[in-house]
Amino acid sequence: MKQQKESLVHCIGMAPIMNNFDWLKINIERINEALERDRHLFDGSVQVIAPSITIENEDVINWEKVLPCLERIMRTCYKSEGSICEGSDKKLVQKLVHDTKHTSTIEHAAVISFRMIIDRGISHEIVRHRIAGHSQESTRYVDYVKKGGGQIIYPLHLIERSEGEKVFWYTELAKAFKAYHSARNSFKWTPQEARTFLPTATKTELITTFNFRSLRNFFSLRLPKSAHPDMRVIAESALALTRNKIEIIYDDFNGM
Image 1 (cartoon, rainbow, N blue to C red):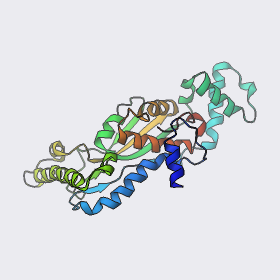
Image 2: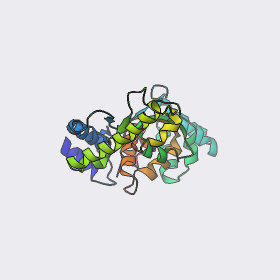
Image 3: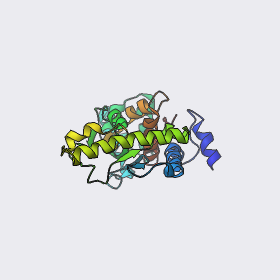
Image 4: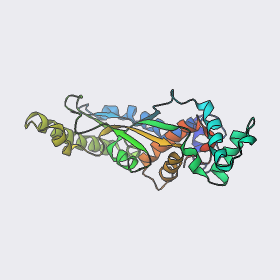
């Protein structure tokens, strides 16, 4: 099964041959495996965790009604409601999304909200998507002294680094959190003042909400090889989650 996943990941542009798109999550799985292997290298003064992403409003959306709703919206533009019949929703969505590119029509039916556990550097890239809503863990109000010392995200590139490099990475980040703690405890700085010490690797929690069209834009920018590797980890996993729910709108994205 592992070999099958690897072969699929390297077939860029190849249409997937499985109904389940968990193979797109292979990089998150690699990070989790590497983190468990490397955990003995870190002294625990700062907790190292893996990135993750889930659909926050999964139980709110009636996925079976999304395509019929989209069809009614689309046919409003052409006043062709009389053509609605069994199976016509998929055919019309396929035509307007992939053939004529009339994608403004997919903005209306539903929105997807993702809960992401990522580092602050990747969060800065995501919040640049302005046709989306964002709610993020605040370093002004969250006191990482009270929250157990803070957390950092294990990055994808660290998997291939030597043990010495991994220890160096962790040690330097731990120094930044030590400075944060000193500012809070010794000098009584407020969290919003002490946050200047927090590194880009600091874990943050972000809720981001896309309509179906803006999510297509997100994938088009964040899946290609030109995107940041850790950004692609999140984008690939978001694509896997989304395609398992409503494949037809995103079946032209296969991971990179």
